[in-house]
Length: 190
Image 1 (cartoon, rainbow, N blue to C red):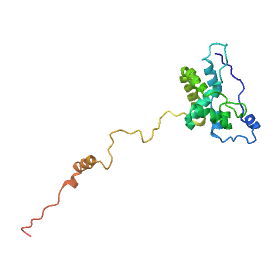
Image 2 (tube, rainbow, N blue to C red):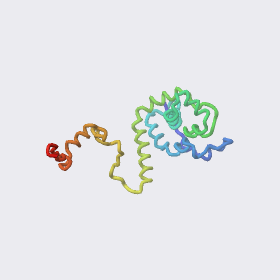
Image 3 (cartoon, rainbow, N blue to C red):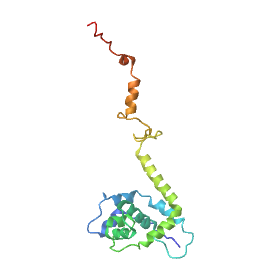
Image 4 (cartoon, helix red, strand yellow):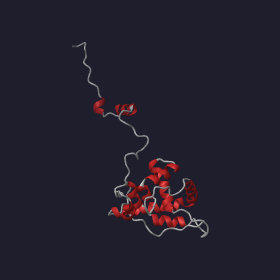
């Protein structure tokens, strides 16, 4: 199967031109679409195609974007296709050039895509991690060499103040000035 990709990167301004109501740049799908390293991911996906003959596969952004949607929205494959068909922001996210009220692919295409991309899933993860790491390093002005952990990283056998073992241990290890008793008064002489 062949793979032919579009070298054109979709722009946010041109997508909303056909809609009577333009997309909001505050939409989470629009923001995520602008963050994703689509070009690098598309180049990695091309490694799966060794032949230049046959029917062309669907674009990587279309199918990978569609496979990310159920993770956020909890949809089935059929539900994802219906949501993409109904929502302009999702169509922008998956890389369509303009809003169309038709399904961009069959739900069974997602199954074929998952099988095809399984071999490069580690490469996809590495590309996304490298992109996120680069964005974080751009925001952090200094190099961090230490790892800061939160309070959940504590020893398992910690003793809490309500433990009776801890209370008894405190009683046994009292300082000497607390261990002495008051002198007894002899009642017979009194």
